[in-house]
Length: 380
Image (cartoon, rainbow, N blue to C red):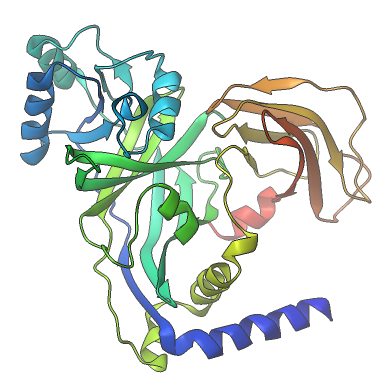
């Protein structure tokens, strides 16, 4: 009965808001990027940055401009994600350059040329689906919907970094940055076994975008989204495409025809309830590798902007997880894999509860529904 009531409520919200819903959609780009070159900004070495921007304009590199020194210079460019990415690569200060996640020893042109000549991507993940911008009641969300399938067996340390860049950003002091990274979101909840297809529904909510300095409702053009597959910081594969051009003034029938019903319901409901669903950047993200119903479950925990400590894992009945003390510390932006062995649940769905202490945020309990391998394989 509760499920029926919730479904009716969702459909009611959809019908009421449909006249104010506008959407645009494009298929996910399957073309591999040129080498990914990351610039970690600091004062000095502007000639190196000029060279990178010229190469990016010619399509020779995919440039990511991280404003590592925003706080020190009084800029309103975002730098939280820049610090996370720099820490992952072992970069303390800028200026610095990394090619496909490999940090260069210096900024000399010959060093960069050599790194680019040796750089290559290999296709390890097949990512299919659509990229959508959905507007409801004057606010815009980004929705990525589709499937992910490994083309080879991958380790649990392989993650997808979704990066939103602004082609030409300007801060409050009038300083410009080309291909500025506005937002980075790590995604970890997908199968790692070759041929095992996982459904994905990744979103960037209006609140999350606002925190990154992005307002797609007033300025929807000039942004690109990259799907960067990394392992221990090293770039394995990357795809980039611009956000789709927005459409507006749709009537009810057009709006409903643009996106499948499920996608519209999810996004519109998320926009309406966004006050209850705010993303706290300090909190970790959790996921699990699809499980065969026996043996160990591999839980993936990605820390947010604050360090966290996993202190316990429990299972909801009828499942049980052997009780034991746990103290797994994870640095900001770091990833850890925790294994547990559930029992006594049979064929019932498995839901785990993780107890996590987040520095500066106190204790949290996060729930995780673990998908079965056979359910994932049915979609293959």
